[in-house]
Length: 157
Image 1: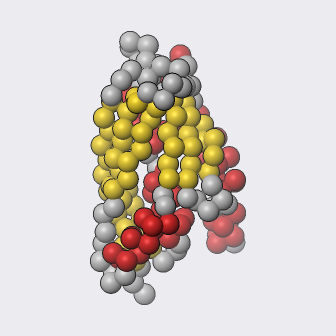
Image 2: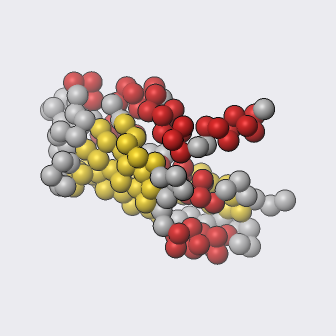
């Protein structure tokens, strides 16, 4: 039963809807607009609202970070499958310019990146790949840049 439930929620269109109802995302106004069927990409948006503004009237930094937090891990985890352990290891975010209006982050994990991860973990060793995502405003101006480091290791039997 548990396995079926996990499989159900791991369908991209279901997972996108569930995450859009996830309390922290709803509270920050984060909306997952796209999650590819093969988990190769995702697009997330967040409009500026009274409840996600900071003291000076721009996007709260915590909301900007939360909108980019889980996606590289989710994309890599679902592309690699159940034979791998994938965790967020660390992250850094640079706030470049004030975020006003709607901000967008587009995530992509290519097949070449997945192949590289598989090659570097084939012997059971851990690998710490880094992924970068830009948060941009409606005009395409850079608001923030996040770098996520994942922990990936092939499971041992």
